[in-house]
Image 1 (cartoon, rainbow, N blue to C red):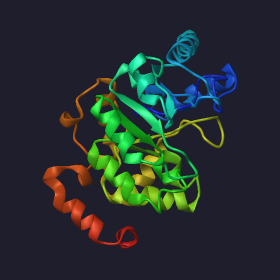
Image 2: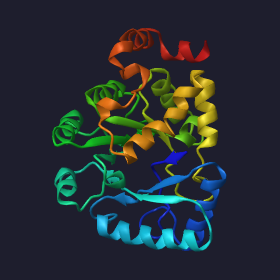
Image 3: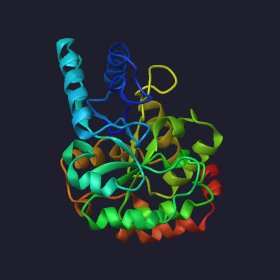
Image 4: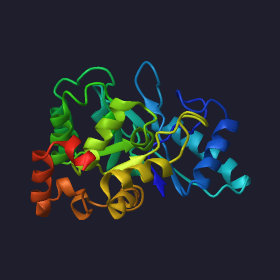
Amino acid sequence: MIDLHSHILPALCDGSQDLETSLIMARLAVADGTTHLACTPHIYPGVYDNSTDIIASAMRMLQIELYSRDIPLRLVIGADVRLVSGVLEGLQQGIIPTLDNSRYFLLEPSHSLPVPHFLRHIEAFLAAGYVPVITHPERLRWCEANYQEFIAAAQMGAWLQVTAGAIAGTFGRTAKRCAERLLLDGVVHIIASDAHNVNYRPPILSAGIEAAMRITGDDTEIMRMVNDRPLAILDNIEPSEVLLPAGLCANRASIHAASIQKPWLERLLG
């Protein structure tokens, strides 16, 4: 599996704070079946002032440590980029890294309040040739009340990344409920761990995958979220050439329409 969201690099943000923790996280990821892990520390000016150079250096050092200990995990660069002014310029200047130097990058909206002109930001990134992968919308406090904004963003061409732990219930009822709704509406592109540590937020995908399979009944599609689509990102495949989730496929519009028309809770309960 490919996990495109983790805070495994030591001492760069609120994730791992030391090499020992990072090594344990790496072993946990491998044991869970992960072969590739994106190193995506926060970039949030004034809070986490990371950059491409800082992240690349830390990633190289950790990869060497993994090799020396025969931990078979390939690291790729990225960042969990807070949606603030200047992000597009940072991407264009190479100060902010994309996922494995592709057109795709992780974009983290504010957790607490709706982002003003949210869809305009999405449009600007897309127009410039970047594909924002919106991280953990299900955990944002404003997701339920502004649910259609995320649907609209996905319809415009943004990708949605849901957290494995949220699907499994680690982040509480509200996040789980929103994750289920996104899955049932067929608009989730990828599942990632958003790992921060060894215990509460480990780099484990399997529990979320199993829960997602139970929710949707579509094992093949769920595996696309941790294999095919993440690989397409690493290969920098044009989005139009990637098989999209059912709710976003033009040739499966009827499925999406039926999903929207039938209350999501009714669909969940069968």
